[in-house]
Every structure is written in structure tokens, then in C-alpha cells.
Image 1: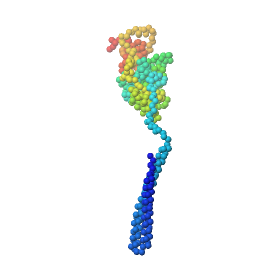
Image 2: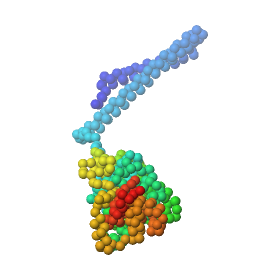
Image 3: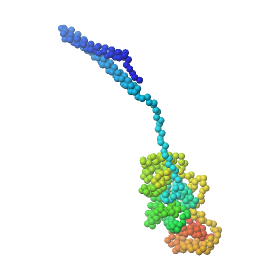
Image 4: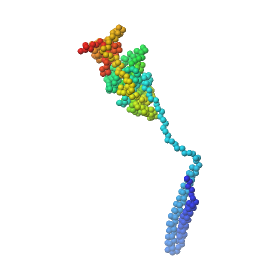
Length: 454
């Protein structure tokens, strides 16, 4: 709004300013006249009187002059303010009459959701040669590993699952074979190499219907390092075993999974190519947190991946059992099925997850007709197989160590794994039965008479 000076205000300003100036100049002139009179006075009393009048007039003129100056300045300030107000009003009047638009608060752009990982893709061993599960203690690693082996990697089969873990408990790996001693791990790896060699020959001959073999190694890098340091032969066995389980075993349905509570480059490789060969699963909130804060191996926690982390978080919103999967250089959100303590999806009929060899166990009353039929077909047994049958006829149930300690030449230089493999062959030929004692296969010939024991 423009403020204008009224004419009465202007007149009052001029009058006040004029009167103050006239009064000050008049008093100054009067003091000069009195000073002149004091100079011309003839008596001392006259001079003193005029000088006193001159001084009094000058003292009165000074405040009156100050009043005149203050009045002038106040008038000038008021004029400046009025001019400024007038200019503002003028500029506002010159602007076009545009409607005022109220801007709505900006909403964040929606985050693009990523598709959930398809677990069935893991069955392709060529695309996912190395599997890993990383999560702190209690993160559900053993359940997830058994679920993957039985329902994803080898569906419809009863895969043979062995766990290499010095701290493993049977309750955590029910239905699996557990190897807790380092010496036994070397022995089991040697037996695996023998099975792999046999399967490769059968694969070259056209066989494809192999029973799945799944090996779980707890803290792979540390375990392998410890085993390799045991001896030169042990190092050779471990190196060959790792090489086989990450290459040719994919063709003969043998897979390996490294389970770890820590994320180590030694486990999954430090180079870009080796990392991309591994498919790593981070189950549960603790596993996801480990992946989200990693800025060294897979670098999801690096600053440049902030947007990707937000995508993954948004994609996992509402997922009951979330997980992250790193596969071929990419990150995927995932949903883990609701699993029971043995890795079975809740709501589905459980599969018989006892080791596959356990399905071959038979009652002692099994007829010996199969043995006679085998003889009629002219099956040729190897010397070690004949020795196993002969020893079992004498002693009954045999462990691999019983054969090694017998002193018989047929068992010389044979490992426990090799002997158990022969047990399996004899069972498949219906020449005996098998059972497990502390997850170790035992054999008994059909010709053994329990009444002769003792």
C-alpha cells in the first residue's frame, strides 16, 4: 500500500524547519551585535554587560540550531520512506496478474522391485557350479542346505548327504552322514574320488541316472587348509576332491556346498571371475545384514550400491522368511520356504531322507534265492569281495576297520571308504544286508548264521 504525504504535513515540515532556522540565525546575529557593542563600550560595566549578553545568546542559538538540523533529517527520512513505498507499489502494479499456484509436496519416486529368486535354477550345475550359504549361528543354514539337496538339486531322489564339520551335531543334521574327525574326512574324500572315477566311466558309457551326492563343508577355507597341512598325500587328496566337486562332478550328479558363518574371500574367491562362479545365499535377517554391510568381497555394502540396497529392501518387504542370493554377479531377493527341523517344507508330505543305502537294508529272513540266482548267472566277484563274504560268514556284522584289522592280504592298502564301497556292491548284488552304526555302513553276509556267534 502506497503512503502519501498530506499537504498539511508538508506545510508543517516547512514551517517548523523555517522557524527553527530563522530563530537560530537571528540569535546568532544578535550575539554578533552585542559583541560589537561590547567592543565600543566606554565603561567596564558596559563591556561586561554586552559580553555576557553575547555569551548567553550564543549558548541559546546552539540547541535551536540542533533542533533545526534534526527536524530536517527527520523530514528527509520520512520522504525516503514514502518514496520507497511508492516504488514498491508501482512495481507491484506493473506485474501481470498471474494466479498464485500452491506447490504440492514432492513424493519420492517409487522404487523398482526386483523379482524373487527362483530356487529351481540351482538345479543347473553348469550355471551354479559352486554353492554357498552364509549366515551367523542359528541362521538356518543346515535346514536350507538339506532342503536344497532334497527338493531342488535332486528332486524325487534320496541323495546321499555327508557333512564335513568337526563341530557337527547329529541333531543339526538328521538323516545325513557326519564326518567330524580330520583323518576320517581325508578317508571319506578318498572314497568319493573312487566313486567319482567309477561314475565317470559309466557316464562315458552313456549312463545318466546317478543317485545324487551332496557334500557340505563347514567353514570350507579353514577346513581345507587344515586337511592339506596333514601330509602331502592328504594335500593331494583334498586338492583333487575340490577340483572334482567343482568341475566334472556336475555331470555325475555330485554337488558341494560351503557353509560358513563368515564371509571370506578364501571360501568363494577374491577375483571377479571366481566370485561370479559362486552362488551364495544369505538366509534370514542376520544373513541379509552380513551381505548389506559387506564392502570387501561382493561389495553390496559399498556407497555406490546404495540404490541397489534400497531396491533389495523394498523387494523383501512383507516376505516372511527373507534371504538374499548372489548369482553370476547379480543380487536377488529371495523367499525361503517354511521348513521344519529336517529341512522339509511344512505342509508337504516328508520324503524318506534316510541315507540311500539304508533303503537297501533287509530283514535276515530274506530268501537266499537271489544269491543262488546270482551264482547261476556267473557273476564274478573280486578277491576283496570274496574276502568280505568269507570274513562275514565267520564273524557276522563287519565294519571297515574289522576288515583292515583282520590281517588278510586282500584288505592290504585298502581304505575304509574303499571297503565300504565294496559293502555297497555286495548289498546291491543281494549277497548281504547293510545297516548303519554311528553313520558308518556295516555289512553282513546272508550266509552268516547268528546261532554260531560266540
